[in-house]
Length: 451
Ligand code: UDX
Image (tube, rainbow, N blue to C red):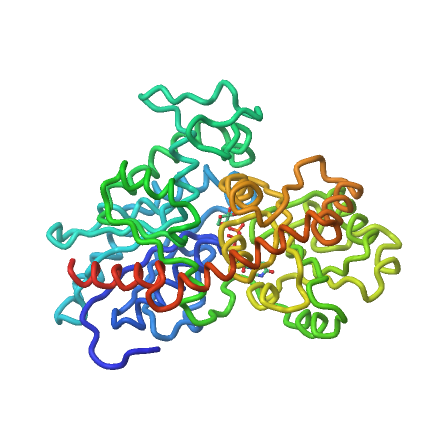
């Protein structure tokens, strides 16, 4: 895969500072490196990737260290705003240092590719003749943005926020699915969204999605932005496996999966790298899983249960109740888990990476969305692609049992499983030679070379 020899163009990649944003950008870097580009990753001090996992890349530190209070406040939108204000000048300094070294063709910067949350990267390159920015994001974020910002066109959906009414023109999204909740105040959300719209000042937009998954929203974005769009997902299918960046994987769960008797019976439970739950939710999840016959592999990140270090607040009697029928780890090799024959369902918070990883392996999803784009993703999973079920009611053990049964035992689940299998086959075609994502990736490489 790796092309040796002289590299003509340097790309500066600016990943978002969260696990779910770092992974796809580093995957993109790996793919573009294999196409002959030099890669520099400009990253913040907090949640920084480990350079030793990526020996082919150069790394530049944007020396912004988030305050502990910001990181622990859970107010991600406020954190994003501050980060963008604070990083703009620091990033320009980084670029200046990099451009000073530009004494050969090899070091020439062709473009900057930035995660849409890192919009400070836009407009920072001194040599305007070479100023090209490729925004990199997930299409679902765009859908949400268009639907939710109260705009001058009068699309003010705020009055009905929280209701089950459909958002006009955005089927199957309901007002309650719009990504306002839990991410901070409405004012902060509106401010961030306005900034995010600047991605449309870029030269192109790269999406970690597949054309057929969301044709109408891609068409709408194209119409609004008049920019080349490249849908090159799922990125993890093009990039070789990268070691997990921020957490240590516990691979013992793969042995536990191997030891299970029947295929497609395990429920894999993971709420991604940001979501937190409280002790009561932990207990209800635990009893809901324990009371069912489906075995489960459950990821509980350190610090993800408020007030606990890990799982010390699990209810008494739980371990005895599950015996060998459950396995709990702090972090799993998720892509391998989802590809394992024993896994038959994924209880997910519907982060975009988890969504893409699950549908690529044909694993149906129980959607328990938390915030941001996750509600939108969950609606697509359950109502458009029909490869999952939403767990919408209050989280308690009976609800967990009910939804697990619907997916893993009932006839309804059979149909969903079949849809998931068919979706996986369609995705496989898209990443093969002449598939839509494969071709789009080649177009992207040509596009960057033409800049
Ligand atoms: C964040 C946002 O929360 C999400 O809404 C947005 O779509 C992307 O950024 P995160 O919550 O971490 O992401 O979820 P997700 O996008 O699913 O990414 C999690 C990543 O961590 C996945 O690539 C998954 O494979 C990986 N993971 C998760 C592991 O490797 N092991 C685990 O145990 C859990």
